[in-house]
Length: 310
Image (cartoon, rainbow, N blue to C red; front, side, top):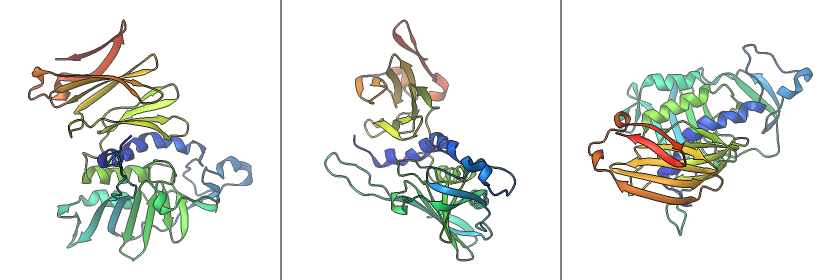
């Protein structure tokens, strides 16, 4: 399945919702600086580190001067040849304010990101496999006024775009509170809300989580949080203005609207195969405003898919 550039980038917001499940095997976050002991061995390990202890590295003691956010993956924009297009955003402090290109960046977003660099566990005994920076689905490089820098990574070899691993002064630190992830996401939404916006709440069925990003429908394994399949929702160069799912007898019934076109699809819940698709132009959608005329609620009744569009 081909991946468009903007489609892959939306994985971040999907992963922010579902990758939180990865933390179930991690040490719980306590308010004290207690170091785990042999009596709490279950709290000493994660999927990536054999021994972890609470740590308070002095990461955020200086002002931020530069933030670079990079997604270094290859995006398949052709059915015949994968093309490598690394995507990045840069925020710099210059002339008394934070700017990304010519645009001014809210300094409160940068300050929240700085303050989120806390409540870490340090990895004292990593497993043999440690993800390299080039393998991370998302990298956030932060440079401070004192000349030091920290690199935030997703920490998973899979397509998980949740940045909760920090590399600082040669050490690896893990944060499980989600504060860091939220701070990075606020920055991304500020920089480009179109690419990083989630289009609907997740659905759960038969061990999978189904969720819309603005350009794609994703199925993720509820245990591993790995992407099982994805469906490109771009048609005619435009993403849907609204979309909804109904799950019935092993199939997903999707309704999405692009400008004045209503599209109805039946998708195999296991494989993501589109079994059939029907589109029609609804004349009443001239100057259509989704939030006013459609409540995004479709449902099955007596074997028929129903949705109210006024």
